[in-house]
Image (cartoon, rainbow over all chains, first blue to last red; front, side):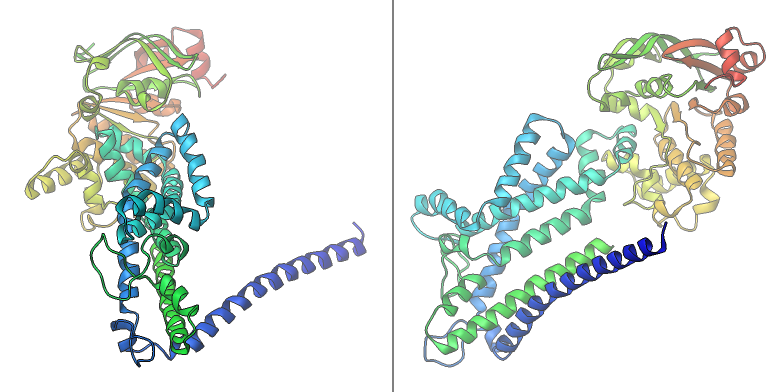
Length: 277
Length: 252
C-alpha cells in the first residue's frame, strides 16, 4: 500500500478518536455544572436541623425536610416490597421459559411499560387506587413507583439469569434436587449480585420521580406513618418549594435536591460495589 | 457376566423428529466400569443422559423401550429419587460457584433440605473427598470457594459431590475431556479405585481411555449399538468391521 494512503488512514483514525473523546468530555460538562450548582446553592441549607425537623411555616426561621426524607424512604421501601417479588418471579419465569407464548407477551409488555411516561402511571394509579379509596395515600404512591420499578427488575433478573451457565442447573438436578429448589437455592443465589444491581437501579430510578406522586402520595407537611394517608417525598417537596414565591423555600428546594442527589449517588456507588464483587 | 444393575432394552430416543438412538440393548454389570465410546454425534451422551433422565431438561424429547434399574423401569420412577441413586459427573467441572468446598460436597443434602448433624456432615465430606482422592489437597481449606481449585481438582470435587449421595451408579460424561493429561491420569486412577464400591458408566471419545480403564465397552455409531462386550476382547478381536475401523483410527 502507498505511504500516503496509510497516512490518510492514520489521520482519519486520530480524527475519529478525537471526536469520540470530545463528545465524551462534553457530556461531563453539564453534569459537573448541575452538580456544582446544586452543591453551591444547597450546601448552605444542609444542617442537622434541616435533616431532622419538619418544615416551618412561611416567614418562620428554621424548619427542615425530615418528613420528605422519611416519606421518600417509606415510598421507595413500599415500592420495592411490591415490585421485587413480582419482578423477580417474572424474570425467573421468562428466563426459564424463553420461548413460551407468555414470555413473548410479557417481554412486549415490559418494553411498553418501560416506555410509559411516569405521569401516565400516576394517572392510572389515581384511577385504580386513589379514586376507589377516596383519598391520596402512601399506598397509592408505593404502587405507582412499584409499577415503574417493575420493568427494570424484570429485565435485570432475566438478563442475569440468562448468563448463569446451564451446567449449574444440571449439576443441581443431577443430585436429585427438585426443580424449584434448584432455582431458589442454586440459580438465584448465583445471580444475586446482578439481581440486586437491578433492584438498586430501580430504586435509584423511582426515588427521583415526581409526576406519579402528584396524584398518589400527594404530599404532607407533617410526618405520617399511616399507609392509607398521604405523605411527603423529596421530589414533591422540591417541586412545591421551587415553584413557590418565597426565597427561603427556594433554599429548601436546593437543599432537598442535594439530599436526593446524594441518596441516588450513594445507591449508584453501592451498586458499583456490589457488581465488582 | 456379573449381576446386572442397569438394563437398557430396545431403547429408542428422539429429539423432535430426529431419532438419536435406535434399538439399544445393553446391560451394565455391578461394580464394573463400562465405557460407551463412539464418534461425535453417535448418541453416547444422549444415552447416558437418559439413564438418569437428564434428557427431560431438553424440550420435545421422546423415549421408547425401557431402561431398568435393579429391575424397575426408570421411566416409572420419580426422577428426583432416581437421580439420587444414579449420580452424574459432566464434561466440564461445574462446582457451585457460591459455595465452599465443604458446601459443594454436602450440596446434595443441603439443597434437598435433608438435615444432618454437624458430625455426620463432617464425616460425609471427609469420606467423599477421600473417595475422590481430593482430601489431602483440600483438607486445610475446606471453606474456600470450590471455584478456586484447578480444573482437575474441580472435577474431583464434582465426583465427591456425586459420591456424597452414596449412589449405586456413577455416570461420567467425558469427565476428562476438559482436563490436561496429568489431571486425566488422576481421574482415571480414581475411576479404577471407585469401581470397588460403585458401578460406573463412562462416556468417552478417547479410545485409549476406554481400553485403559474399562471392563466392558460398548461401541455406538450413528445411534446404533454396533458391538458390546469385554474391553479386552473388543480391543483385540473386534467382531464388527466398523469397530475395527474405529479402533484403528479410520474414522471418528
